[in-house]
Length: 107
Image (cartoon, rainbow, N blue to C red; front, side, top):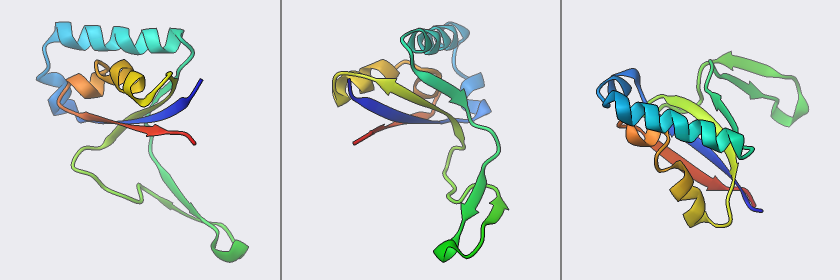
């Protein structure tokens, strides 16, 4: 079955202004995806890694890219199609709490 990477973006302010019942349902959706075998995690502090021309590893704390909303989490899900993957993540916390979820097909 095809796999998809999802990246959730959202902030605490958007989460907090979302009604509790909607948040509870969104967390239940995350739990259901996990029960289906999805690998789900919240984003921690990123580290940039470079090794130009294999000459030596360089690291730098912090994200390489910045966005209007911070990265909140990631998941690897399975779905029969892109449309099904979109449907699966359309009710997760970032999607319903004034954030956004990107869906990337793994090829």
